[in-house]
Length: 274
Image (cartoon, rainbow, N blue to C red; front, side, top):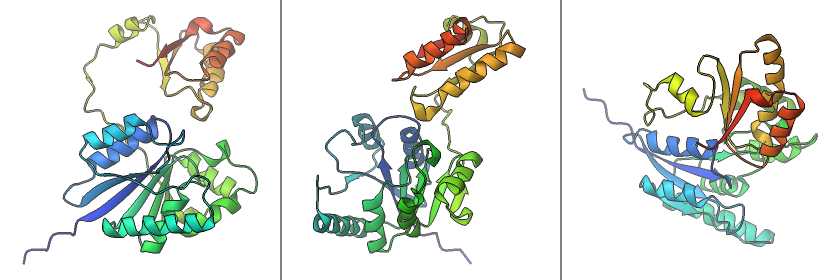
C-alpha cells in the first residue's frame, strides 16, 4: 500500500527588522531551503514607509528568490478602530493565501503584534524567533508587555542556551514554550580550500600567530566590547594572540578607543566589511 503524500503547508515568514544583518540572512536561508515538497513560503514585511521598514536589499533578495512578498496594512498614528481594521485585513490576507503557520523573525519580544493578532483571528498558529536576549532592551516589569503576545504564540525559538535562560529570567517566560534552535550558516558559496597563511597576510596579520575574531555590525547588541575586554586578559596569558574584528558601525571609534585605553591597539585589527 502506497502512503499518501504529505500535504504541502504554506508558511508565512514575517520579517520585523530595519537593518540587514544576521537575522535577515537567516530569514533568507530559511525561506530558500525549506523543503519545497512540503512547504510553500511567503514573506511578509510590515507596511511601514519610514525608517522602520525592511531594507531595500532584503526585499530585493526575497524577490530574487522568487518568493512572494507581501506587506501588512499600516496606519501611521492610527486609532484603535483603525488598528482593529488592520488586524482583520491581516487575517483576511492570511486566509486568502491559505497560510498554515506564521513564523515571526524579530529582535524583540514586543514586536509583531499586528500579525500575531491577525493570525489569531484567522486561526493560524504563530511561532516567534527572537534573535536578541531581552536583557539587552527590556526593563524590570516588561514581562507584562510580553505576556499578552506570549498567550497567542505557540512557541518561541532562541539561538542559545544563554538566550533561553535570559528569556526566563527577564520576561518570566515558561520554559515549555521556549525552544533552543541554532541558526544556520550557508557555506556553499565559500571556498573551504583557502590558504590560511595567505588570508592572514591579506589582513596584515602575522601568519605564524593564532587569530581570534568576530564578524558583525559594530553595534551594542552585538557585544564586540566584551571581546575587546577579553582580549586584554587573553593577551596577558597568551601574548602571541592577535584579534580581528570584521564589520563596521556606530561603535567603531568607541571600540578602537577602548583598545587604545587597554594598550592593545597593535593586537586588534579592525577590518571593516570585507
